[in-house]
Image (cartoon, rainbow over all chains, first blue to last red; front, top):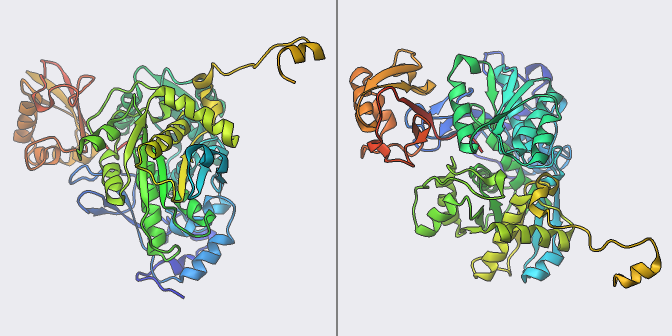
Length: 441
Length: 91
C-alpha cells in the first residue's frame, strides 16, 4: 500500500451533501483543490473566479492537496465509480458529492483499438483512437464544461457564458439547461451550420460576433470587466482554471482503459493548447499518485496549416508563439492567438514529441481514412490529428512500433461541409438489371 | 494624442478601481509611460524586465492586436481606444 506525501484526499471520503458546496468557514468546497497558483511565477491566491495572475498576467491553475491517501484504495474507488468523469472526482476541483448534482456527466468514452487504421499507417505497436464524439453533445467540451458548472455553482453565478468556436457553445447550452443556469454564449458569426444548430437548440441565447474567434474571445474578456458581465461565469475565461482541469480526465481514462498504463505516444489537437497541457498534467498526476508506472511518454501536437501558430513556432525553434489570422476548415481549432501555446511548446520539447500541421486537403483525406478504416466519423479536428499522425509516421518522427493514442475530439456530423463532396455511389432504377449495370453486383 | 485606456480588473488596484482612464502618447509605448506617471506600478505589470509586452498580455489599439501591428511602436491616434487584456482566456 503506497502512501502519498501530502495530506487531504482521505478526508474527502467523509464529505456529505450538506458540506459539498461551501465549507463552514466560508471557503468554497471544490474537493482537493487547495488554491490557485500562477503557472508563470508561482503566486498563489485563494480559490475564486479569477484566471490571470495579478503579478504577471500568467495563467492561474488549480493547486491540489493530494496527500495522505492509499493508492490501491484510490484505484479501487475509481474503478467502482460511475461510468463518467466523476469516477475521478477525487482528482478534480469538484465536491465529493458531485455525482448527485444535475450535470451532463460526460466521459468514459470509447478507446477504440484501431487495428485497420494501424495496418494502413504501418503502426505495429498498437494504435488507439480516443473517441470523444461519444460525449453528450458530441465533443470533448462536455468534460471541461462539467467542471465549470461545479465552479459556477460554488461561486454563485447564475449565467453561464463562453467564447466558442462552436463545440463549446453547445456544451455550455446543454449543461446550463440540465443544471438550471441561464446561458448566453458568443461565437464567430460564420460558424458551420451544424454547430450553430447544436448550440441553439438548448434554448439559451446564442450571439454571433462579427469577427473571428480571437475577436470573440477579446469581447468576452472585456465583458467580464464590465458591469454588464457581472454575475456571469465565462467557463473559459473567469472559470478557466476549473474548466481546463476537465481535460485531465482524457489522460485518466486513456491510462485506465489501457489497464493503468501510460501510452508511449499521444497525438492531441491544438486550439488554445489547454487540452494538451492538461493531458500532460493528468499523466504526471497519475505517476505521482502511483496509479501508473512511471515511464517516458511523448506528446505530439496537431494543427491545421491554415492556423498553425504553435507548429510554426515549434519548427522555428521559438519559445514564443506569434499569432496568426486563421484560415482553415478546422474551425474548432482556429485560434490564432493560443493562450497556452508556449506551454505546448515546452511539453512537446520536454517529452521528445513534436508539433506538426496538415493542409485542409489532408484533413479531409484523414477524416475519410478514419471513417473508412474504423467506422469513426470525426469532425475536422479529428481529421487534423489523424492527418498529423500519418505525416509524423511518414516523416519518421512518430515511432510506429510504440503504443500510440490519437484523439478524436468531436463528431463529424458537426462539420458535414468538410466532406460535402462525399455522396451517392450510383443512382439506379429499382430493378436487378440496373443494379448489375451499375457494376454493384 | 489623448487616448482612452481600458483597464482589466486585475490592474484596477492601480487606477483606484476605474475601468477606463485617459492617457497621452503618440504610440503605445508612450501611452504606457504616461499611464505609469499617473498610476505608479502599472507599467511593470504590463511590461517585462526588458521593457517588452509580457507574453500573457494582449493589447489592442482600437480593434487591432498590436502584435499584428508595430508592438509598442503602434501609433495611438487622438481619440483611440486602447484595451489591455489578459491573454490566458479562451480555448
